Image (tube, rainbow, N blue to C red; front, side):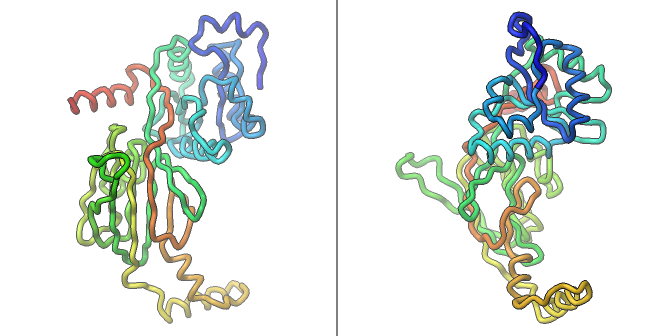
Length: 327
């Protein structure tokens, strides 16, 4: 943490009143960002995110968390924060900042060229931004609470699965809410995507870009009976999977055993079970496998995280246009 004298007195003219946390991939990158920040706000406290992991109370000294990288860096930050605090309620507004080799639709600042970063950061100092809350997903997998910033995927490839998607009926009273089956189809997987995730993996499966925080997107992976994707209301969703046409055969087991022999690995006492786990149903959250053998999943979209959005940025203009089209 970098301390500056008389910080409180000088920072009164800034929209930033405490300090800023920076999440970077290395100390060198942190120092680069810190130097650029202090050129514009020399009295500001700049705190590495790693320090907050060790001393969570340091979060009270921050107004924002600046992430460096692509959209995946934001997902990592939020997931790490949730594991530490078991909540996102105290998460400070995120400032997505991309490095030259990264991509990210969420970006508000860029490290290159430096002049672009300085121009954007001056907007923050002047208070020329808004705070927008973006929907994220929560689920419980094998007793573990997990969150997804971009998407949650129930996947069974190379098997074929019969997927049933149910959604909580918002028309019923809160005391008598019930689930209703939305659709059933044969597919390799089914994905629930947030508006943040609508510009990520779901696009590869014909998903639509959406900035509507009151909805979710249902995307089928290699659907057979239906490849249609759905825009859903922001209600709890339940996914059920029944495996069809398992692909683990005697030939599969034989090839697996030959592989282990070739690389001089210990003999697998139950190769059929191993392959059943590895190639069976799996839960993928923000691009990472989190669990195997799961055939039912409830997804709760009630959480949200704050984002700093510069006025008149691409994201700001797109969200305003989305609201206009919805009226």
